[in-house]
Image 1 (cartoon, rainbow, N blue to C red):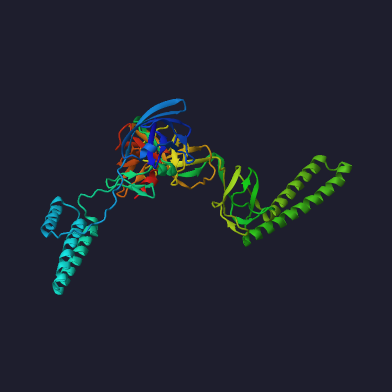
Image 2 (cartoon, helix red, strand yellow):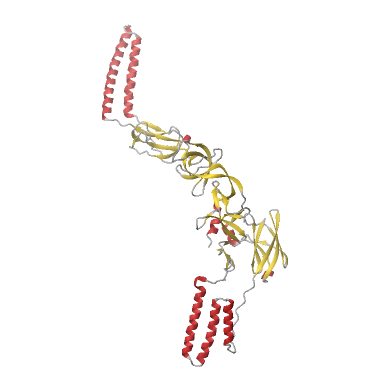
Amino acid sequence: MFELVAIARGEALTLYLDRFATNEPVKDATIQADTPAGTAAAVPAPDGAYRLEAPWALRPGQHQVLFTVSADGTADVLPVTLKIPEPAAPLGSLAAPSKLDVPALARDLKARLTRGDSVIAVAAAGGFLLGIVVMVLVRRRRLIPALAMLALTATLLLGSNALAHEGEDHGDTKPAASQTVAGRDLAQRLPDGSVFIPKPTQRILAVRTVVAAPAAHQRRIELPGRIIPDPNASGYVQASTGGRLSAPPNGFPRLGTPVKKGDVLAYVTPPLQAIDVSDIRQRQGELDQQITIVERRIARFETLAKSGAVAMVQLDEARLELQGLRDRRAALDRARREPEALVAPVSGIIAEANAIAGQIAQPSGIVFQIVDPARLWVEALSFEPVATAQNAFARFVDGRSLTLTYRGTGLADRNQASPVQFAITGDTSGLRFGQFVTVLATTDEGKTGMALPRGSVVRGSNGQDLVYEHATAERFEAREVRIEPLDGESVLVIAGIGAGKRVVIQGAELLDQVR
């Protein structure tokens, strides 16, 4: 249930209590300890740890302590072995020998070489011996041999120092498991590749773990895709004939402006060629002439109709003919003056605008594109069949994911692939059509593995995927794994780590940066 680390700091123990499975700190717990001095209770500390008074911790050696932990209605008994190292012995003063015993010093030097002591110790002993010889030579007034011996001593000392530190080739010297500065442990990478992270540092980095358990999952494939507008909630605004664009009374709509179906977005005035203008004027003259003739006929029929010389039917037909001529004349006037109104086919926002006052619009050119931002789709290209009964996920490069609903698969190949369309389910704020995504689609093939969050997998220096196993309370080991995509938030670990291992799911990138 729990994991406890006890660190001796003077006459007190600092206790770090975490959940064993998740590495989550336990703050509201009751801790009773059976110590060599009797039973004692730990009290919470401001930093989330616990403090236990332990004067007996000053004695070197191993101390057995039994902790009883109670939290959230559960209890656990944790036996702890506390190891207190022996204090470092102070360096004693060197007493001058009363009698010089050169053979004894030589035997001692030879014994040190035989035992394989460090080069520094050997150099120090040799320097001490040569110094005594130099003193004897000086007393006997032999200066030249004395100077030669001093030069030899300096050479040996400097050479031994260089040999001891150049390249750090110390043979059987073993690095410590952790470094301590001013009573504080430091995180570091150990020679075997594992990472030592003290409990206080784990609290700062918010390292969290999960117990890996294999399970059966359906395999997912990665498909390249992009966001497209919903065909039923988007549309183009195009001119039926070519002409010059002009703005409505409120001006052209800007990008992102919401519009409703039927709103006038622009006007297109068709250009008239010189020959067309001549034909229209000629036709207008003919119509004006016919209108004048019919008007005079109607005036004459009205006079004759009073005396009964002309039937009323003829008068009505003349009036109808006059109305038709006037309508045709008005249509020619409108053809020269009235532009074509471009209206919104659907409701939404302006996603694309290519309208400039005075621009000549082409019949096939897109003047405006309207998109409903709440209804977007994703189109992907698949090289293998995709299950149609289950949902899929879309993932962005920044880690965000979207839930997709299958809509259909095309039969026509596109670059040897079939287009597959999905509808985006949920919030679509911040999305724009044309964005590239990676679609994770479900297949009928089953896979067995451990599902882990994507943040738990880091990339090693050799390009291999790694996860960190929480081996012991303060040690993490990197494990090479083989993964496959599972969904927008998780990956499937196929090989590399066994069941029941504690795997870091939060803070793995920070652990990987420890050197």
